[in-house]
Image 1 (cartoon, one colour):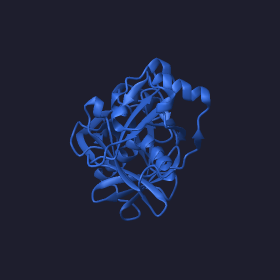
Image 2: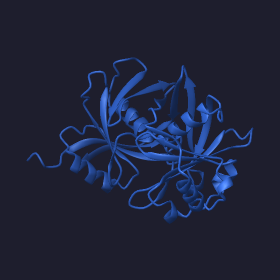
Image 3: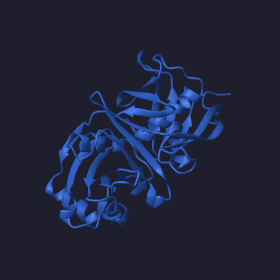
Image 4: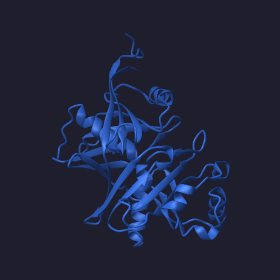
Length: 283
């Protein structure tokens, strides 16, 4: 067997942000990816045709438990939310034992990310925003046009960059979020997350939808990185309580649930992870 020859590697596909199979956001994980180069990883991620595929590797930072590389079908990401939770679950299921009980330390392109286990549910510490604050008037007008809404309907618009270049848009209600029929061509390369509050008593506090640029603009089923940025934005501005539940993926027939909590000044973004496929892949 030559160094470039495929070999069997442990593989898992998991549903993230859902306790019920096939209702969240799927993630493919190559559990023992040591020896693969970035080109081979990108080729495999393109082939899986999922929003993200991850590759688990030994850590380079001695304080980390494992290292992960995260790929979309077309590029590598420094950080993403649902791949963080799914990779953590896959690492634990493969026999990984964290250095600190109850806390995993993931090494990724964005640095070290803590992942804690709370009653079986995993949650990651929201990474700091590398860009925040209002967008310019032209971008705001473009967002209104792309969402097919009058400018006044956008209650607030802010950069929420934490790896992905998110722009957050706050609407008055969850019903407005669910009713959106965006002009994706108008949104173009913008990565947009829209959030609006549910009425009290519905069991969910916010509704979220995200539209991601790539080879084509698509709606993501459930998006951890946007929810992490939105939590910092909304809790920090007093628009959201320090503990809330967000729904995402509703219009796509999914039932994603994102659990957000601020504890001791840190925001944690959590969700259930459900294994769906386990086996090996030749790569």
